[in-house]
Structures are given as structure tokens and as C-alpha cells.
Image (cartoon, rainbow, N blue to C red; front, top):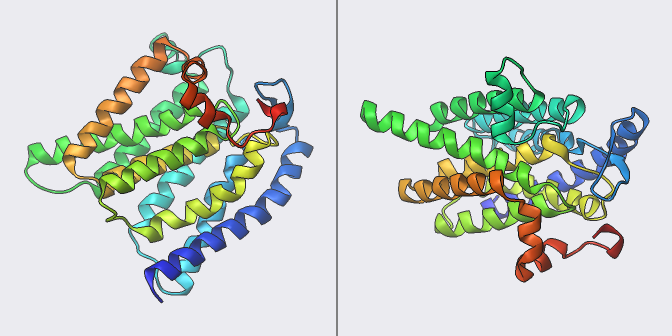
Length: 283
């Protein structure tokens, strides 16, 4: 089978898996009390993003059955499962009285570990593990520069998608936008068998998110962000990766001082894109 056909089938398997899992998961979360008020004050299921890794594993199982599974996929799967787990902990146990890198690390320096701080520390370890596993070899100096660069990209991209997930559909729109840019920067030289599974998964979840029927939570946004970071380090050349890192640093500095939501609402084009697909009831 051609790569295009396999990638198309992977998207289909991912979409079917996500649809079936969501059907049962939403009721399970409601019945177990895993709900939170969204920005409109409505109680909806939270941390629905735990469905993403499960759906993805089913797609990679499909790859294995047709003998198209690459063992390099192990690193990606370990990463998304681990980061989803940390996000789930923050969704379920986290308090919202401490926000941002400055708040979480400030609390840590005072001897208090917040769930957000635990997620940041764990996310950094996961990012370093992935970077150490896939970064190119070379001289000792160049090798460690590459590892540090890749670690920071994964860690900051993971948090970047978390920052976007404040309105229905925004995180997925951000994911699709950054993915499109990444494919362009890579000149189309990407692994579609790696990209296709999550596309199928999120396109099904997207409808639920836009209707504000559920929140993916950090469990989901962390998976999206880590995925973009992973794509960056395996698809992009060093100059592009440096540019991506500078952009991510600039965005984190900006969001420590200013509200991203208010910025989006002030810029007409961003506001139109942000509101596209939502009903009037959902902003």
C-alpha cells in the first residue's frame, strides 16, 4: 500500500477510535464527577484529552498489524502517555490560585510543590528524555547544544498549547495552524504516518470542543503541544528550530505579562478565527 493510502486509513482508524471512546468517556466523566465550570460558568466534563493517547495507541496497533510500525514511534508514544498523565493530575487535583511559570516555580523555591509545578518539572524531564533519544550526534559541544535546543522546544511547545486552551476549539486551531507552518518549513518532507493518527483523532474531538460539551484539559493540550514539539525536532533543520525556540520564548514572556485571550479579542483577524465554528451560546 502507498503511504498516502496508509495515512488515510490511519486517520480513519483514529477518527473511529476517538468517536467510540468519546461516546463512553463523556458519560463516565460526568458520572464520576470529573466536571469543571468553563469560561461561561457551565459544568462540563474535564480532562477529556485522556482519550487522545488511547485512540493513538489503537492507530499504532493498526500499523503493527499491517507491518508498518516503526520502533522510533516508541519514543513518541512514551512521551504523549507520560505528559497526558501529568496533565490529568493537574486537571483533577490542581488549584488555580497559582498560575504561570513564575507562580509555580516561585512556589517551588518556597518549598511548596504545586500540581502545575509538578507538571512543569515532569514535562521538562520528558522533553529531555525525548531530546536525548532523537537528537543528532556530532561533537560533544554540538550534541549537547542540539539536545538543549530540542528539550526547550518540546517543553515550551507543550505549555504553549496549554496557554491556548482557554476557549472552545482554540487549542486545536492553534495545533492545526502550527502543524501547517511546520510542514511548509520542512518543505513537505515529513512522516505522514506519524502525523495522520492525531489528525483523525482531533478532527472528531473538534466538534465536541467547539460545542463546549467538554474540555480536553491539560491532559489533551499537553499531548497536542508535545506532539508539535516532537515534530519540530525531527522535521526541521537547525535554523528553523532556533527560530521556533525564539518564537516560543517570546510568547511565554508576553503571556506572563499580558492576557492572550484579550490580545486575540483586540485583533480582528484573530478574533474571527478564534470564534469560527462556535455557536452564539458558546462565544
